View 1: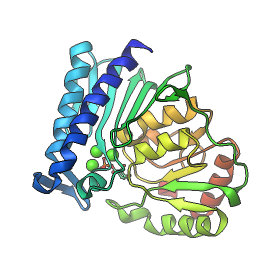
View 2: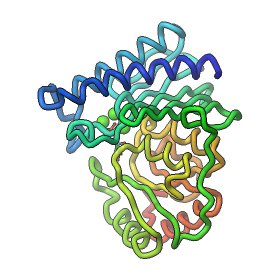
View 3: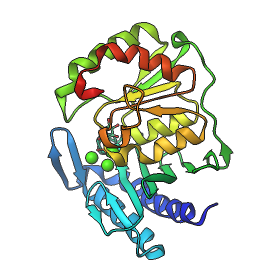
Length: 264
Ligand code: IPD
Ligand code: CA
Ligand code: CA
Ligand code: CA
């Protein structure tokens, strides 16, 4: 394993174990609201501190971009961290949440870890060296027909500006696919896309820490990732569409008629 990935795995496991241990005390946590339906708990913050500490102990000169504490330092190497993706699920005891850590080097994502502490599933990727679930090499699914496809998504909930477009896409997909799922951790959704559990995925308005690691997992598992019009702006805009090589263009085709200029 690449030494930088190894450190990221150590950080993700530490944070994941801390989160897992905290599931017994969710009724007693201090919770604050950052915006409509965006909550943060002391567990999010403690997990983030553990990750940053572990990474900076190994690489003191690297920079950090983390959801709860923002950007620190300046370097060609930037660690992009979502310490607890799926906070709403976590706070309800709904067992679908994850830790997501990516390393960006000169603008390119080179290492990725997504850890699901509930299922003890560790998803990892190094650019050019494939994606893995625990020790098993990952490949995206092989389904080719939209009618057979299972599509993952996330509902817009902090910013409702794209609601109508989203519901239009959702309605078309309900009629044309074998099912839609919204489990509630975008990072884990992308990891599951890499693992072939979904055939496609789309969401609007995500943040870079939700998707940085997951997008490398998907491309290393042989899948495609783009923004909603097939371009490569997804890390900036957070509008994202993924799929295997057959489903991805078909998903883009269904999405296209609904796109406002702001979503392109
Ligand atoms: C959220 C999750 C969710 C997605 C939201 C994110 P958080 O992250 O990834 O699946 O739909 O847009 O904000 O706030 O739980 O880290
Ligand atoms: Ca959040
Ligand atoms: Ca998140
Ligand atoms: Ca989070």
